[in-house]
Image (tube, rainbow, N blue to C red):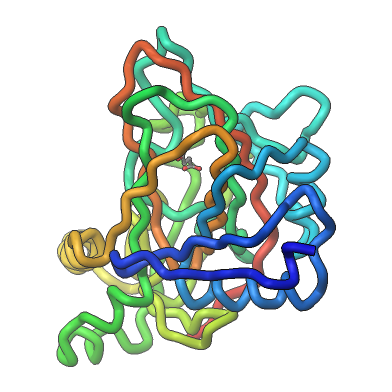
Length: 275
Ligand code: SIN
C-alpha cells in the first residue's frame, strides 16, 4: 500500500510541493487524505507525476476532499458532466486560463480548489505558473499589511463569462455572480493570512473609488506575481496539479500554437471566507 507512506517535498520556489509514493488508482485512506489536505493548505498546490487515472478515479479522488462543483461555463468531458474540458486545439489561438487568476472568486462560497489532470500535452510549452498568495502576504511591508485591515474586495463573473465578456467561453446567462470577500482572508486549512484578490475576477474594493481601488490592486498584483512567489510546472501525460484557490493563483501559458493540449479539471466546493 504505497499510499500509507507519502513523501511530500516542497519545491524550492515558494509555492507547491511534489507528492510521491502515491498511487491515485488506489483508494486513499483517511490518514493519507488528511495529510494531503494539510499539505495543500501549507504549500498551495500539490503536484503528482505518472498518475494515469480514469475519469471515475479522478472523480473518486476529488470526492475524498469535498463535493464536486460543476463549472457553469466550461465544456464537459463526454459522459462526465462533473469534469470540465480544458482544451486548446492546434488551430485555436486562445487558451483557457491564460492570465493570472484563481477560480470562482465571484461565488459567495468560492471553490476550494481544482484537480487538473494532463491527458495530452504539447512537446514544448503549455506550462502552468503558480503563485503563493500566503507567502505574498508575508512578504508585504508592515505598512501595506496595516492598510489592508478590514478591506473587502468585490468580485464578478459578468465581465469575463457574460454575453459581452472577454472569455471565449462567454455568452452564458449563468454569468450573474457577484460577491464580496475580505481582501485578506484567514486560510481555511492553514489559518495563515492570504491575499484574496486576482486580476481576472476582482472588480473593486468595497466603498473605494474605482481609481484608488485600481491603484492598490495593481500594486498587490505586481507583488504577488514577483518571481520569488512563483513556480513553473511542466506537464507530462499523467501529471496532476491540485491547487487551493485560497492560497494560490495560476496562469496557463499560451506558447504552443499549432499543438493540442487536453486537460481534465474537477473543481471542488469551498466555503464562505473570513479574515
Ligand atoms: C485553468 O485555469 O483552470 C487552466 C490551467 C491550465 O490549463 O494549466
